[in-house]
Length: 126
Image (cartoon, rainbow, N blue to C red):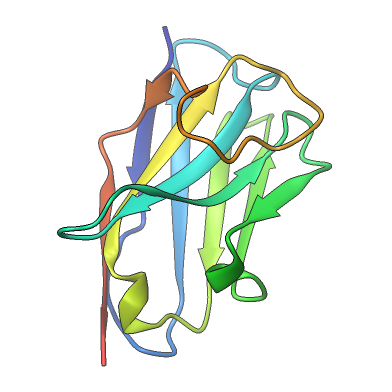
């Protein structure tokens, strides 16, 4: 079993930055693909960014391209989401997810992910 714990969320003004971390435990995730998802009130969960097992290939939702960066440190069993130039529409609960599918390609869809964190709230004020 893999346990995922997100941290780094909070309240920030528009234009500010936050760095989310997702620490995995229970098993090494160095061969797992990882993803970040978010869900705003009244909206469906959506993929934000994803990274393949080696960190060589990434995916970003169009609305966050150029502002968000996903990365991973396999030695620390941790995945990060650096969020810059935050906008009020980025407000949501952000979830980290892991899949044992060690694909070369990042996985944007939620269905393949079998492990999820509890989420961390990100609130961007205007």
